Figure 1 (spheres, rainbow, N blue to C red):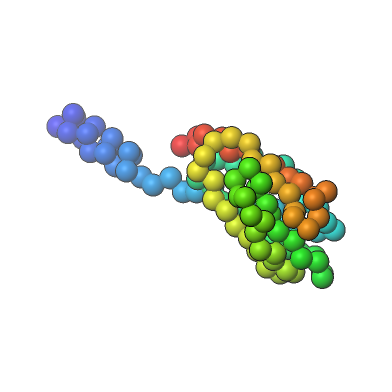
Figure 2 (figure 1 turned 45 degrees about the vertical axis):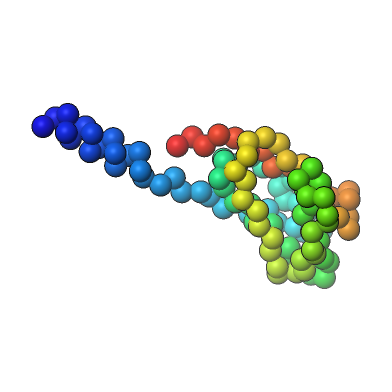
Length: 108
């Protein structure tokens, strides 16, 4: 009976889904806040433009050959990260705006 209970418990624990998190990066006064973040594999980053009038984008040049579309005040852009590593990015229209997402292995 004890070994059957162990098998059932292991099966339940191994099939429990790992919940990915969402992390928000705000864009304000032509800055990514925070500029550098560390997330776990599978998490999603949401960039929120809280400027009053300015448009921006989030361009991962090492991943995307073409510059992505702009998003405007009160709009968001999001991206999920499944690969481990460091992913620098910039704002296409404002190249002095830079940031970095570091993706580490999930602790679960």
